[in-house]
Length: 394
Image: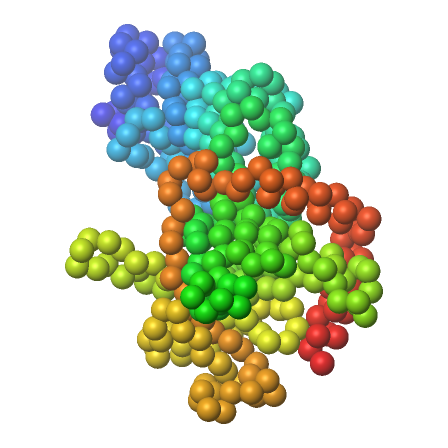
């Protein structure tokens, strides 16, 4: 049917029922759709209905010849980025789910909002989009009454040119916002560390990380804040590095004032394959590595792979020297230890937006910290953070 229609004039659609036209359009590439819309008056009159029925749209960067990859469901379209500029977004009134992949930009988000396009949009994802900044998030937070009432989920995971502070316009302007995601779903949860809480051997220190990167630890100091940077070490997105911004860090007496804002330690996290127990329960765990000097997370995957091959028990910690060699328990001392690797049990947060997002008081304290950080430029913060890192290296 597709071959016959492609070989015929667009006027061949004129005598077909609307439902038949819609079924045929599901098998056409976007280029072919655009051709027939432009050459047939009947189809041009139906364009709003044809595109308006779509509820999900995924934009990808591919190298194939076809601009549209057919889906089994009639409400989902996948288009190539090189053709997406041809889409008449004003006709996608029914669209609820938009995944932009890595190609989202500030200008695109600006166009969406200034023209109040996609009024029924519920979710927008732009994972890994390097050209989205806090300015783009500000534009996204506007867009008329429909945007204010309908948009409930925003995924900016690995959008490294955005910040935690950039999420506040979304929180403030979108009435029904439920989820702001700044990290992969598998990272949401309670990490049971091998460390004692408040020096009580019977109580483990627990680190909770929320979808937006906020965190809370059950210890008196350096216990809450947000992830200010998250990046990948490999293409699987299972080996990640981060950088933490505390909202309650008190610098030692002999440290300069600015260090309370520039002390941003990081860790490296490797996702361990889930264990499916006989009782049907799945146990999740991670290997967390950190250097014992400086601020930067270790990027040596061989150390984590070595730790993974050793199959250390959950709740245990091992140490490596600067060469990456494993240290025996009886030779561990501060001079030899360089990297500490801990195997932690991870209890995932429930798939409930209210549980995946942080409590209001944590967000409030993080907002206060972000306001305090405004006295420093990004260049100043980077330079002073690097200076502190070098000082702590010794």
